[in-house]
Length: 248
Image 1 (cartoon, rainbow, N blue to C red):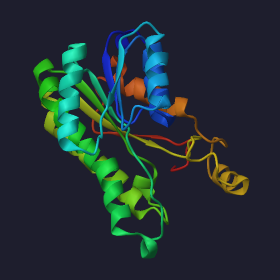
Image 2 (cartoon, rainbow, N blue to C red):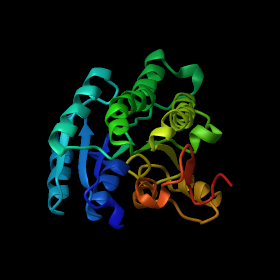
Image 3 (cartoon, rainbow, N blue to C red):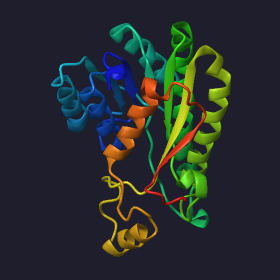
C-alpha cells in the first residue's frame, strides 16, 4: 500500500496483543510508528526493536493513555520527534468482567478511564496538529460488544458503545478539515485474553460465526490499514465490524 509509506502512525497500548500486530503491520508497509505502553517492560522493548528492523523510524513512549496531561505531552513529543502525525489508532483497552451485582465502582471507573477517556485524551491531543495539516485519520477500537452488549461485561460494553458515539460525533466535527474518524468493532479475536477460554466455549462461539473461525489480530490490523490509507478517503463516521459475520 504505497499511500502508507512514510506516514507517521501512533498506536496506543501496543506492547502486546492486537496493538502489537497493528504496529508491526504498518511498519511492514513502510509507515513510521510511534506507540505507547504503560511501562517499559520486555514486550515494550522487543516491539521497539522489531519495528526498527523494518528500516522505518520507530519509537515507544511510556505513557498512560487514561491520563489527560500525559497524553497531551506524549503527542507533543511524537510530533517533535517525527515531525508530523498522520494516523492515530486508539487501541488501549482492558477488561474487568463481572455481573453487575458483583461489579465494584472501581471496576466500572477503571474501564471507563482506560477504554473511553483515553480515546478522548488522545483525540483531543491530535486535533490541533491534524487541523493544521488539514488531513488525518483517527481509528478507534470499539467491539461487537459495544454494538450488541454482553452479559457480565456491562462496563466494557458501555465503554465500547461510548467510543462509537464519540467516533460519529468527531467525524461530524472534523470532517470539514479533511480529518476522518472511524471505529473498528472486532468480534472474537484470538489473543492472549482469549487463549485460556475452555474449548467448549470457543466451539460455541465458532458455531455462531458464519465464517466458522475465530479472527486473528492480523484481520484487525488489515482493517486499520484500509482506514488509514488513501483507499478510504471518502469514509468517515463508520463502524467497521471485523467479526466473520457474527453480528449479521
